[in-house]
Length: 559
View 1: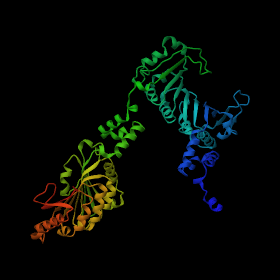
View 2: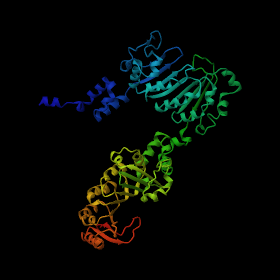
View 3: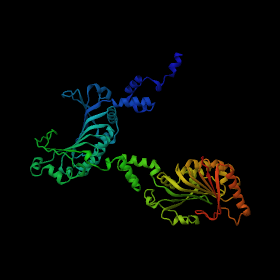
């Protein structure tokens, strides 16, 4: 019995304490361990939350030198982070903070290529931390922001409390800085700049950055800084260039300017320090609109939904939500499939003209069709007509089907879906059409063909899948009515209204004298079932070509 119990022990039922120890020891495989079971995933997430915090990371580049990186880490975490025996370590034994700080050098080419043992080591260190309190990146003025992107990739999406960048010479690095603070949830951004032009040219940068950080500090270290303090105070420079006080998003900005002794070796003793605080409550813009307002904007401007999705991830999510919740999406007026002799499929889509951009029809090529049936579609500005080889429908490889799927995915329903088939085709393509059109609600499904009685089961499945309200069957052979009693019983349980439309040419039908009698007989039989109400209509019918008669069948409701 004991042996049987031992055999039942596996990764899925190990005690939680054992799982925690395994995760701690094999941290490098933590992402794989999260996939074992939901419990392993939960314990792995708990472990990640409890990871140590790095107090400070210093990154320094200077031309002609290797990249230097230093970590301020409590001694008890050095083994866990794997920095006891750091390759290319710098001797800091004589420094006062040697116990808590370690430095090593990396080849800058390795960093740019993001490869090599040193880069793998860096990634491992950052992966084992929960956050960094201060990340300082110091660059030579001629290097600029060249290395911001590689460092961002090494740190991943690690939370950073304060990001301090020194050596910024121009505004070319701004977008990389924005990406950094956004992806790493930076709270405070400090910029040490060498030219006042950086401030003048960075108005849009400050506006955008303040959407992601709560405060920005920038320090000035340019030439003749003391002279500027007298003749052209920095606040006036900023104000006149509408960088801070002249912009809507920082109307509540708090500016602090002070003068002290300038010391190039100590960044804390600079001539100017401007603090810009962003008060979210005083600003309303696209980034922080309430979700209900965003939903209404998307619904009203649905034609521009592709552009809207690019504003922010939140806008993209709400736009996707609208597309998935199709109730608010526009309808397709009509979708026609017609199969011609010679393996050709004709597709016509009729859409509201006001939604042409939304459905991607503005620059869409319309294939002209010589068939008389499509003439009225070609003349309509709301229609799009194309011809496709039917074999490609079966294989699902035609690019036009991708367009059709996109149209369908952006619709709430189809008012009328019409499928016309020749005698030789029958119901062969009903299932492929179902796959192309997807699970879309259809108000009316109209099927025309000479072999509909052969595909009764496929029709039942089709109307169930699409929640069809009205099913119209346009038939060319009287025998369909004669042989469809069982079909009536099946179909009436899944659709509320059925129309059987007679398209039999009277002048060529051998049984033309008995047509009305056959249809009356079918109507009477349907009424006798007690489950439906059947009515016979005569004469021309709207929306049908050469229709002579129609039986309308409605399901009886329980009273």
